[in-house]
Length: 282
Image 1 (cartoon, helix red, strand yellow):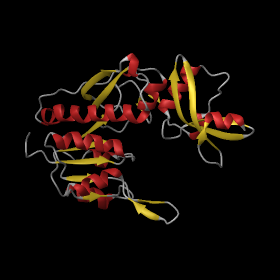
Image 2: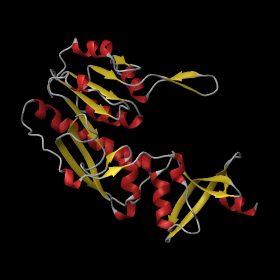
Image 3: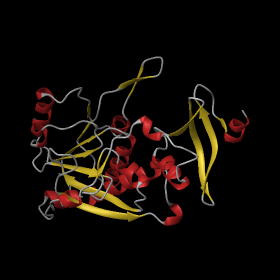
Image 4: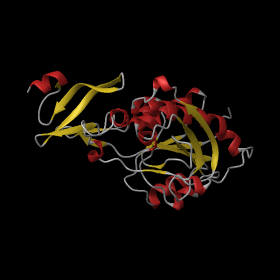
């Protein structure tokens, strides 16, 4: 590892921390972390920091949390001669003025085999589409969504017995793969040992932004495996639900056994979580 590699990390949620952990494990610590502002949570309106900020604070790394990306923020970045920026799930679009600041551009980790599954929900879409072969890609960020040239890419295959994984499990697998891939390629790219490869636009596919309404399932008409795939893909948020007597019934615990989708617990709208067998008695 080169001690001279001077980089800034842009990221926000917990799975961006997986990338930071892999970088740190290999001895790569960012000089600066940029993340989104703290947000108010709960009835007490207390502020909570993004997971990436908490990680940076624990490692004594300076943090910036700009409300907007304006000239004052850009000037802060321009004052230092950073070699490169690294971005993982930052949550904001970066203007060209920012893209042009670091000497070697911005490397972006993406949890799919680009140009496949560009967009906002590649991990969820991999599960929904039964993409047992997926992976991570590092690209040079440009002004188009997940479009820039590829610096590195590695695939993984999930064994049939482990498919489908819960969203949180596959996210961790893919983002840690992205972090390890960054360790492999970042310094070689800066040193001119890697020639970036233009993405094949004819093979591009896209994942959509997930909405709460996408979690609706029909227990009588939808194929049972499709329901389970959606349960895994939407695990945590937005979750899946069915409607009974005009009320949403969220499925909070389920398994796939002997070709059947078996519901264990549900959360009826406006009530507490109960066992599904008790719900059926009502």
